[in-house]
Length: 184
Image (cartoon, rainbow, N blue to C red; front, top):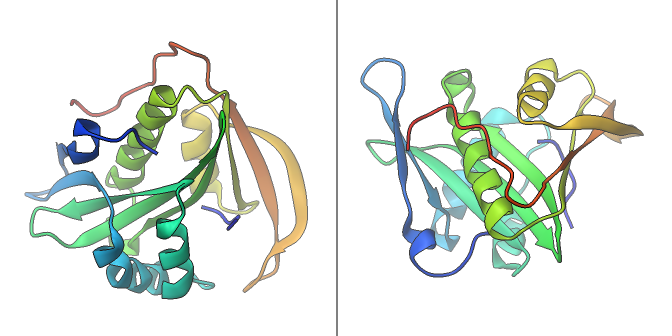
């Protein structure tokens, strides 16, 4: 299991795509990722994080039955963000949200969060967990906006630079209305 900062039912929902108009003429859409996209995700990791996941880690995660990856692409097809989620029984864990630095604050992470919570509702998850760098205030604010609250600290969890992880949790109540900030 990968635990870092920062599931879907089979069938038609797997093919679902959501679009949103971003800044300027950019158009983004969210899809479920597959193994063909691993090298793009690894390149995005290297661009976005000081301690990126390797292609081998991404392949292993994507191959696991318990993990689902969602990608956000521009209209031209370029991957600009992705999220990895793990589910075990009625528990979910947001393993990673990775957004290209030049696409941050343009709604990419919010699109991923909405897709993740739609999946959580479909799977009837009791709660979701995540870990985030204690000093990553923009990410913490995003997670709080989606109902996560602090649950604890993992001392010296992150490397490059060494930093504590804030553990956050969100209860997922059956039938809960997930806040949507973009139209369907």
